[in-house]
Every structure is written in structure tokens, then in C-alpha cells.
Length: 307
Image 1 (cartoon, rainbow, N blue to C red):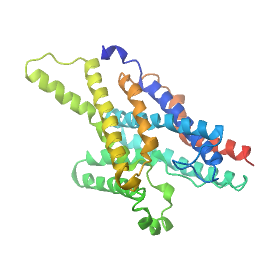
Image 2 (cartoon, rainbow, N blue to C red):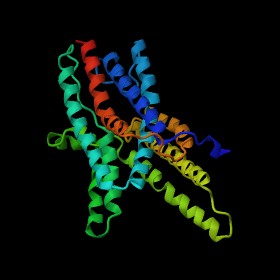
Image 3 (cartoon, helix red, strand yellow):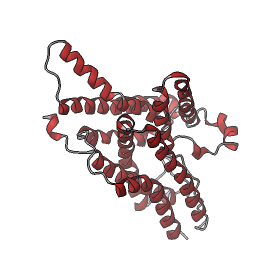
Image 4 (spheres, rainbow, N blue to C red):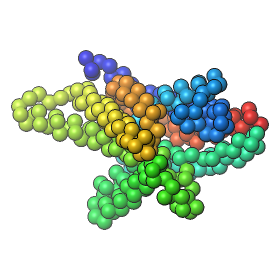
């Protein structure tokens, strides 16, 4: 039965991820502009405007996007014929995002005094995760360089802990806050669960055949992979939600009141069939440019509205 619902290729997962990511970013802008205090939205801020309520809903359902990007990255790193080229493309996107952040900042300065401070980018996380796998699976001394992306991930996690944040203030005079990862340890653990799910499925299949059982077919293996990834999403969100409750939120790095809605992503992950789906040269350019371009467009539209 589970094999029959495997209807989504990676192409459709990208469409879903792009759509919900765009909604999330629109929601962020709506919340920031319509928060009652006139400052960036924080959980608990009264939602006194219909626009802010819409923005909050967009923000909640937008949590679906990141686990899907994690899935696409995990499969990309596993099946890419040239990992170096794949990572170079990610790095290029991250460079473009930095330019887009600058555009958003400069255009918003011409609004009604509502400046925009560039926020952390999820692509910083994705690039760090990809670099870790690239290095850890190398032979020789290069393997030890994997400590660098891990260090970046850990620092990004620590600076977002409310109880520790003030200790890192001197760091921000040298490295602006938006240069650090957004999902850090939360995303890294999810990525590891997603990346190693096919290996776990392969070992499970081997154990079945060694014990005289019939080997799993392709769809059954994909069902195992999907179930493992769904389990990763649920466990990681539950664990970090529990951590967020310690000492009245002093260790809530990810605003789990909102972030736990990422568990909505279990449905498209469960429906994945492991196939690449539609692919063409123009589509590759589109998917690589979508993130920075849509951010710049959203920022420009809101800047024009509030000029």
C-alpha cells in the first residue's frame, strides 16, 4: 500500500519547497511590517491586523520547505556525479544571496523608516552540510577538515541560544549575524538522518537476504527510506521542542513554537518516489536563481508599498 502512494518526484518536491518558502518569506515581511510594536515579529506579539494574521499563517506553513530542501540536498550529494561542481553551485547561490540581502537592505531604507536587517540564510546551512559530507568521505588529511563546517554549525547554534547570545556580541563586530547558519544543529541532525537513510535501507535489505528472505524491490526500499526520513523529522522536532521548554525558553534556539510545524513536511516526504523527474537546462538555472531573486523581489515590492 505504501508503495502505491509514491507519486512525487524530486521535481515536484522542489515546486512544493519553492512555493512554501516564498509564502514563508512573504509571511515574515507581513509580520515585520504589521507587528504592533513596529519591530520584527516575535512569538507572543499581538496580531492586531488581518495582514499580520495572514503572515503568521504563512510563516507556519512555510516550515514545510526546509525539510524538503534537506531531502533534495541529501539526494543531490548522494547521487551527484561531480560533488565538487555541485557544491560550487551551492556556493554561487550563497554569494548571490549576500548580494540580494544588500539589495533588500538598501531598498528598504527608502521606506517609512522601516530598515531591513539581513537575516540568516538557510543556504548557509545547506552549504555547510554539503561540505561536511564532501570532506568526511574524503581519504587522507582532507577528512579532518570536516571539523570546519561542524564548527560553523555549532557556533551558529550557540549564538541563537537566548541564554548565551550576549556572550557572542563581540563576534558580531567582526562577522555580521546574517553570515551564520539559520537552522544549524537542528538542520544538520535532520540532514544526517536523511543522507544516511538509503545506507540504512541497504543494510536492512542485506540482512534480509542473508537470513534467506526475498530482497526488497526498489519501491519497498524507497518506502523504508521515506519512513526513516519521516522518523527523523518527528524525533528531531520533538527533541528540540522539549529543549525549548527548559527554563522558560532560555535554550530555544529555533522558536520551536513555530518551527515544529516543519512536521507537516512528513506528507510530501512520505510520498516521494526517489525519482528525479523533469529536468532541463533552463529549469536548472531557474532553481538555482529562484532563492536570491524571489527574496529581492519580495523586498522590493514591500519597500515600494511602504515608501
